[in-house]
Each structure stands twice: as structure tokens, then as C-alpha cells.
Length: 315
Image (cartoon, rainbow, N blue to C red; front, side, top):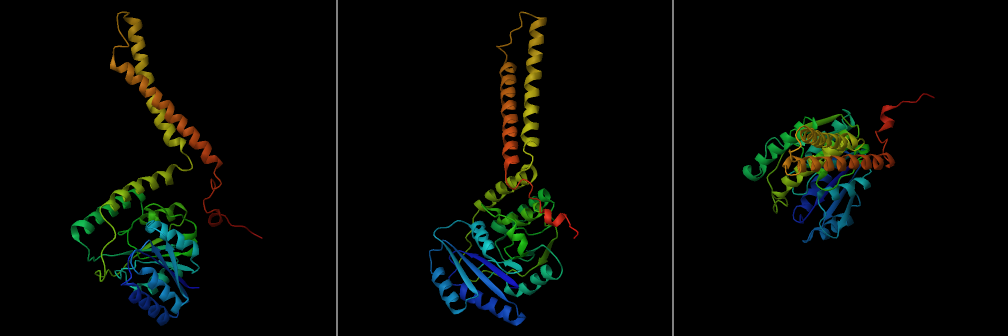
């Protein structure tokens, strides 16, 4: 199978018939073998009925229904497990992503050899204050922290090699950071393509301001996990030793001062309690690093570095 198209959605009953007809037309014009996986993320409109109707008419369209809203990351993760196409393309269901982009996204992965291609909505039709400006700031921070030179991490229109989506797990709000997750797994050939962004035709946006707060928290999480998951002692141990040394040095100073001047009171000074607190915190951080290191060493995927991509064997 050439292509799997993954479409997470919530309350998009109005746009689904037009979107699926458009996708089928593009696939037919380019003679692609394909499947389309529509994931209903807890819709309370007629989306699931529409999906069933579409799937009954064409078996290449498949539906997955969540009993409640779990979020876009969960919807993508479930669909990725089911995807069979050599190239997996994700897009939103609101008709703001154009299916006409599918052939070029497919070519960049299949023929040009990219592991992942992210769309870039250079010209947007969103609200400048609530979406465009925060999005630019978010992308700039993510670009700086991850080292991946993409202009639009949050674009829903992306294409992947099948092995990329099978090698990552998407959860929380991590769908924004799939390029980062892919990079940590050794898929470093990441490209970008300027794509058309269309004005919303039906419904309204399902995302609010909280997505930016959650997004930055998830970015901090993913950067920490990516850097220290295999070596947590380097983070917790370093902080622990630093805190303990500060407390120990302060305590040593107070003790020496007491030996020089017996009238010098240690326990009445704030520095005494600060030094004790620093040593306790330092010890706890060091132990946390030690325990995390033991857990990491016992993890079944502790050597999961895409070894097959790095090692060649001769017969």
C-alpha cells in the first residue's frame, strides 16, 4: 500500500463528506493504493454516523471511535499502530489542510528519501492575536531548544515513513513534537514543505489558550526525557552534589567560626538551617538520581537506539 492518511477529528460531521471525496479524487488521479483512517475523538455530533456511511461506501475508509475525548495525540497514536501504507500522511479534518498536497508530500518521502516532512503554513487565515503570534513564539522556542529547523511544528499536515511512526509513541500533547520524537529515535532527515492553508469553512477551532501552556510543559518534558532518560544520574546527581556541597561548606564555615570564638552561636543563625536544608535536599536529589539510574538500567528498551540503522552485517 502506498499511502495511509490519518485524520483525527472531533465534531467535524459537516466537513467529512467533502474532505473524503476530495482525498479519493486525488488518490484516483495519481493512481495511489491507499487507506484513510478517521479517528473520532469523542465527538458529540453526527461525525461517527458520517464515518460509518463513508466506510460502508468505500472500504478503503476506516473508522476508529473513542468513547470520550482523549486528545489529538491519543488519536494519532492509535491510528499509527494500524497504519499499513509505506508513507503515512496526517491532516486535520476541518478542510484547512488541502489533500492536493498529498502527491508532493508522498514524493518527498518515497523518492527524495526524507524520514519526515512537515508542512509550513506560511500564509495563514487564523486570528493574528490568538493563533498567529503565539504560534510564531512557540515555534521559535521549539526550534531553539530542539535544534530542528522547522518553521511550523504544529502543522497537522505531515508525511512520514511508516517505520518512523511505528518507532515513536505519541501521548499527552506530544503531537506537536513528533519531529523531536523522531529525531531522538535516529530519524534525522527531516524536511519541510510550504503548504496551502485554507480558511475554515465549517465549525470552529477546538483548541484554546491552554494548548500553549500544555505545549510548553510537554516541550520541557520531552527535552528532559530525550537528554536524560538513559542517564538520569547526570541530572539529579549533579544537582544533588551541588546542593550538598553548598550546605556542607556553609556548615564547615560555621563550625570553624565556633572553634575560633566559643561565644559564637551557630544555632541562632539562619545560615545554620539553610546549610542543613541544602544538605538534606542534596542527599535526596542524589538518591533520586541513583534510584532513577537503577530503573533505567532495568528498562527493556535501555539499548533502543535504532541499532539496525547503525550496524551493518556481512554474510
